[in-house]
Length: 341
Image 1 (cartoon, rainbow, N blue to C red):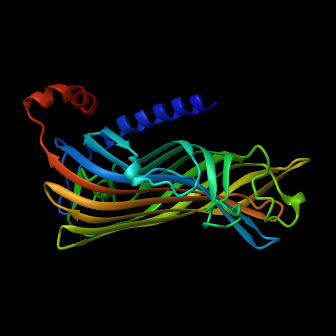
Image 2: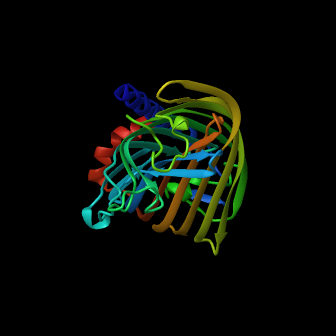
Image 3: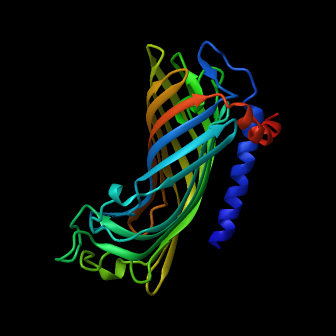
């Protein structure tokens, strides 16, 4: 099941990348941002991804925040035209053991910014979680309550139209293969959909905290879809310093299903989703240093007095250097040039 989802996601990502090369050829207003179509964008970076689950028990007025123990990764990468390759590894020195248990995960996130569009794809497969904050519901000798058999799957797609793509470049903030020189903003409209499940071999909530064991459950399934709208703005200070923010709200329609030991219950409803992006740093003709954060919260239809959601995040610190490839490198890049043309 997972392998089919992964293959599908990779195919879609390739199509998005190839499609972007054609869209990006449309002329932009060079007074606002400059493009570097023939440059290699080299990068060193630190990054962390996560997919957390929040379960809100409205009867007992209790929140349960399940977080994965994902690694802080150090990586290198490069972008040339539409093609990007990043290689990263979570070194032990960056990831000390804090008693949060082990998380096995495959987290596929695609955040693409072709001219006039924002495209995001999610394929997340996690196993092994712990409860936050430290000490909540934990055994006396442990720092955290650990749920090693908790499994989370989330598949999703998000798309938006950027009305002012001639003057606002989100690629300048996220990929750094463009340079935003003047402040600009744009309204955004689009559509999104998500589906997935959260499950455990026994029960999801710790039995030593839940007052009514009959309300506990072991499986949560969800699906929702709907339109979205938002606004993005880049503030440029003295041509080089920039702060970019983007906020989107969505009213989604969908269902959530809770399955306990003896029964299951499905509810349909309308709930708001949220998608936030923030970028800040320094950009110039040759190099850039910046930090960025992408946050996506998907909320499910209320079910049996539970309000549940999945929160996905990706934050990075980038050190960027742009340069033109030499004659030898151009020979190896010819395949990409032919596709882009």
